[in-house]
Image (tube, rainbow, N blue to C red; front, top):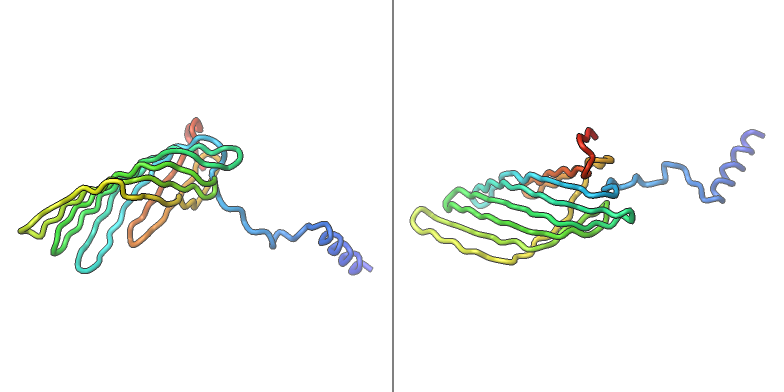
Length: 173
């Protein structure tokens, strides 16, 4: 009799649309509503065709997240790549971006100015290229109520960032 009650209870819950917790996907981490100030560090080394490139850089951004989970804001990325090998090179770029997207998938797009310098020990040269597209998304790895973090590594170069909720003081999460 107890077994029959258990089956009837399970059937009733199923009819009401109540599913077991195991069937629910985990919520994606995201930014809670508010204004967020972020900073990031770009670093890494990559090698290809006998050239080694060391990359360093910084990012700063301010995001505004609405109660409806929409994102807006601005940011600035600066990056320097120094290459060594048969040809020495220095490539500097500065990008200004605008943010959009959602609290779980904030995206950015803008333009970057790139300055290059190359030398092979005898000849050297350089050029400035303006208004190259620059876009991407912040990959969130951990989100708390007053601190959100993220990181991404591509071709040996990592971008690690942290954003703090404006007015949260010292945040320990």
